[in-house]
Image (cartoon, rainbow, N blue to C red; front, side, top):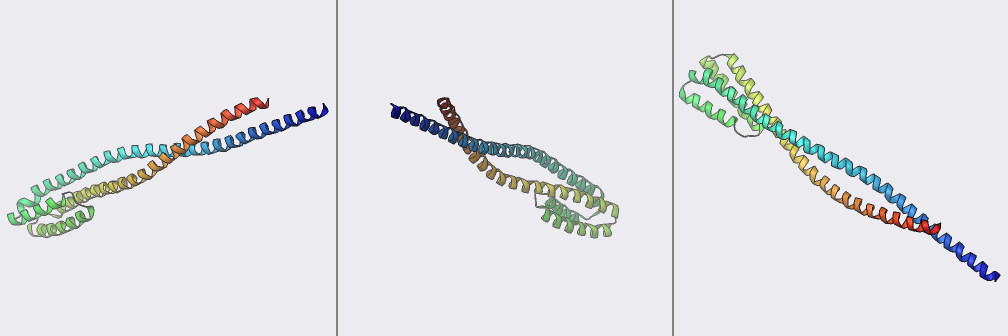
Length: 207
């Protein structure tokens, strides 16, 4: 009789210890997964916020590009009007036509470096022409100033395009990070739920 009681006591003790061990195991895993989940959730939120900010920045850049294109056109239009009024009428037709062709190339869709090179060449020829025809340094200064403004607009426009290309490359990397992060996020969420259910089950048995 005593032996049966002792055996029953041992069985109860062993069972309680096993349940306690299982409960502790689930608590430990639950804590680890929750910590990892919290860190991952924070990182994902930050990346998604960055993506949102980049999207807004892109919209601003598109608007800025339109402004810059318009500014460049306006500056060259002002320059052309000045040339047509103050300089070209005073030149012989052949010289005037050559300068018009050069100016046409400058205001085309070209890189800022090429634009600067053509502008310098144009201004040098224009200066020589003005000295001969005598329209005055003020006109030359105005022409040069307007063309500089036009080129600056083109330069900023090209810089924005470079930035957009870099952002596109970064987007690919961030998209991959978000995809992996969400997959891990889902996996951790499932693990946490499973361990919470298991912990709840074993804690009831422990009582």
